[in-house]
Length: 432
Image (cartoon, rainbow, N blue to C red; front, side):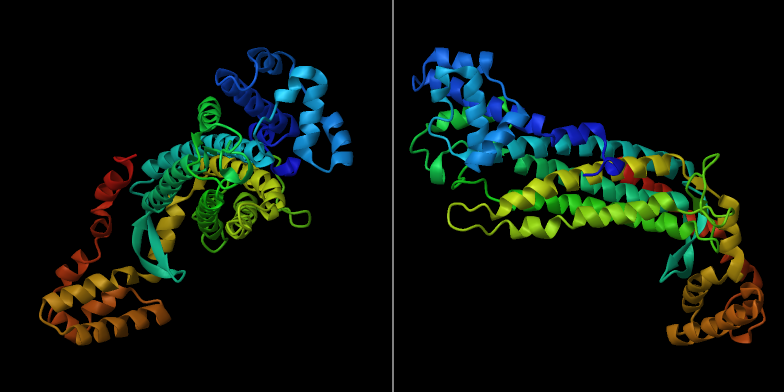
């Protein structure tokens, strides 16, 4: 978490002030539930809400001696509450507070990320619809293949982020569980109704079985979903980076007045945003493996997961929040060059229609093997010598014996390749 890649709302979730406030609310709600059961006096539960407070510096000072953050927190709160503080943490264990707090933090982080995804989806949809029929060459292995549209390219990315959004909603639900079950999770010293009450007040659900910690497969899934979303971000970013290459120049990041691309070369217009997004995606994905490794804990509890989560929780969510915001801005201001797309499409003299000719020849009676051979022969001649593909086909005796010149011209109609664009758009956006 460094300021350069942090946004205030997400960063605030992981600040010590927020964490300790959540701890205090968990303890206070638990006291309320125990007061209802008659386990603690109602006056004590009331006192927690009225006088419960903490100072971060004081907690740090106490922890220097106790070497235990939850005890340091409880000691500091007791300094404010007074005698009634002896009823704090009745029947609870540290993980009840820590794990429930983490569930609240991850849920809040997920809510921000879902909103981020909504903004990115809106930007992608706007650009996709604007370029629904902007024809461009599709590439496989980075080599010209057949025509597509720039709108279809973006529709594919839209669909990926839509899937990512649903996965995040599911992961949020899975990680939003509360554990107030005491040592080794047996409820021996605390009633299960206390857990249910705290869960309800904190916007969580009760963990069915928690040992002494909430099972970490929930968290592993959460961070795995963040990693997949980050990978989708990199996929989009790599596409923009490729399209901005000088040799292509089909689209580029907005270059603002006064912006500088290079300290040495004044002409440079570099894809700095998309390159940055590739790097940020690596950071988010780096949290996935440690989260997976946290699943295997010793018996009912150890704390090998704790240090990991204290780092990956803030780092992964803060980084992804920033990256999604940056990607949204990049797509909103993306500069698209349809004329250059057309020039690139025409660069190989119509070779992108080779499959149409192949299929037409087989329909006209030629074997697929012979059709492939004769089309490829002419295609290689066109490729190597810069000749117009359709002109070569018309002068080939084998081909002209099966297809007329008019038929060949019809096979080079660009609208053939875009006839189902509307169908694909309905599949992607009508379900949005």
